[in-house]
Length: 193
Image (cartoon, rainbow, N blue to C red):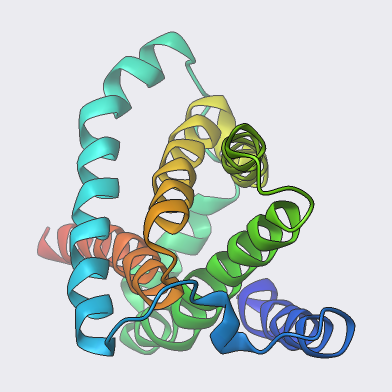
């Protein structure tokens, strides 16, 4: 939680300052196409459904190819979360909004746009998309090889969306919903028994 709220918040500010004062761009320049907030919200729901569907469909085959040990550090976290409605609300609110929705997607878009500024060549743009997905997956290696691959696939879906549609708010919405729905399922299932 410290990483998500404090460090994530600091990094958001740093990226926005770099964007503005080093790159000479504004945050709205990260939206490479025109759009409406309500369309971004609806697309975010669809993107979330797509990433969750890929997780459901690919999870078993990937876990069978790359067996992973259970995460030792996450057990106490989940136990504490399911026993405390206040902690659950904190995680579902500012932790996921700042840490997943804003920080991770702003980082992805910041990286992609910086790389795309090097060259407008289509092959280069696709290489940047793949690189961003690999880096995103590697950033989640603590989840084991299968978890990193699954996260990389979700990152690839988000990066491809940004390549074609260029709207960051839909990605932030989708990432928040993707993580929030999984945590909500854990919370409900643990408290149902």
